Amino acid sequence: MLSTTDNIFPVYHEILGRPEKEALLKQRSKVIWLTGLSGAGKTTLAKYLEEALFSKGFFTQVLDGDNIRSGINSNLGFSDADRFENIRRIAEVSKLLVNCGVITINCFISPTEEIRDMARRIIGKDDFIEIYVNAPLQVCEERDVKGLYSRARRGEIKDFTGISSPFETPENIDIEIRTDLQTIEASVKQILEFVLPRVKF
Ligand code: ADP
Image (tube, rainbow, N blue to C red):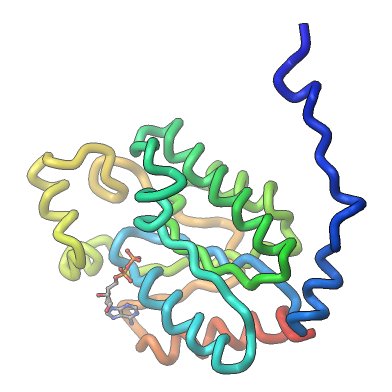
């Protein structure tokens, strides 16, 4: 019996490649992967980082958890299997964007080493910049940007990362940003120092 993939023939050789697209955009594409607890500052930093890169002439795209979950991944929840599938699809989408020459900034809790390793494997380690956006749980909980922590504490949200679902400290990071200890401006500067040499054409 034929498997579902036996009759699929991906075509890459007839399509314009990444080098041509990077040359057009005058940049090297990378995925900047922000991992961390809810409320740690991923979305905030992504926004400022994108503005900073864009103002320097770089072409970027932010992928954010809530947007993706309300669109392409609207059928997924927060079980281990769904979290895995959520990140698998996001990694595949990111790979497409990187192959288009786009600098992709991703804001996803991505709570386990296994999940982050999968994303790195799909995207390719040379294109994957991992940033740990770190603030202690207590600080994230005090910020409670979306009121989710208090709902999780009341038991209204199950499998909430940091409360009833684990967040494993990332082991393979390129940068750690302590958003409880430094300003947004200092954090963006720290990220740019690492990223700019890697995206310059
Ligand atoms: P996440 O995307 O990780 O869930 P958000 O960016 O949505 O987090 O929320 C982080 C909150 O923390 C925002 O309200 C932001 O204004 C606030 N905040 C306070 N100080 C900082 C800082 N130094 N860096 C980033 N965010 C900060």
